[in-house]
Structures are given as C-alpha cells and as structure tokens.
Length: 166
Image (cartoon, rainbow, N blue to C red; front, side, top):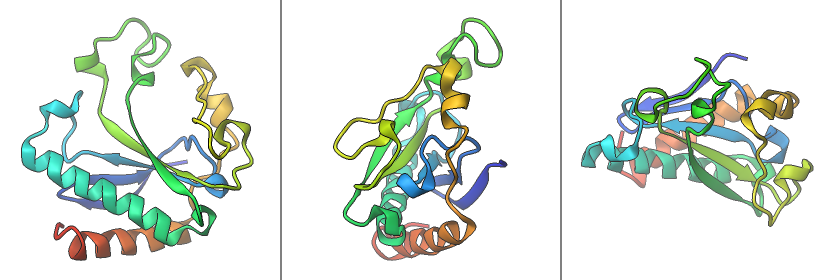
C-alpha cells in the first residue's frame, strides 16, 4: 500500500500509513507528521509546535466525529520513532537518533468493540518487536477512501472554525 496524504497544511501532514498498526474496523490508524522533519520535537519552533498541536487535535476530533467504529470510543496519541532505531531497520546496524529518527504522532482509534487481542478496550496496546512488526500488521486494513474523504473535510472544518488555523 502506498502512503495516502489526507491533509497537508501549516501544522504538518496527515497520512494513512503504508503499514497500518491497527485495523480500520478496530478503530483506524493515522499519522500526523510535524511541519518539517526533525528527530526530536524540541527542534520545532514555538509556532510549529502550536500548529502541529492544533492539527493533531483536529485529526483526533475528526476521527471521533466521522468514524462509526469509534462510537463510545476514544483516540490514543502516541509519539514514535523507535523502530527506526532498531538494528534490523534500514540501514542495518546501530543507529544515531539525530540521523535516523523522525518525530511523528500515531493516532489510534480505540473501539469498544475491537476484536484484535492486542487492541482490546480498556487495555494498553501491545506492539511486537521490530523484527515481528510486518507479520503482526500484515492483516490490518487501512481506513477506506470514503472514510479518508470524510476525515479530510472534517479536519479542514475544525482547523478553520475551532482552531483558527490553516
């Protein structure tokens, strides 16, 4: 699957990841990248952090507003970049965070009806080791094109109205 961009604005870029870590029916998975590539969020300016925070909040709100599978559910926000530092990740071998890590936020919809045992309601998600990640995620389906279109419209509306951002 190719990475799908949902929204690109001053706050960053919202994508459907190439390898979803949560099935769409169990809540859905989006990634929010900051407005520029950095290894650590403290490298962003005050305005960049503010815009990224507004975009992230708008994405979470849109997920709750638009995805029926999140009825009565919530969204988990998880900053990541750990697997990029795994010795088996490209390029193989030891990694230096400033060179290999890129800050991004995963937004995971948490459904009360999640079927996958690693995404059960009321429990912390359970992620595999890097070496097992592709097999673990192989059957997870990304959000549909229709869901992404609805999310795009709602994110943009929230940015314009609630967050006064673009």
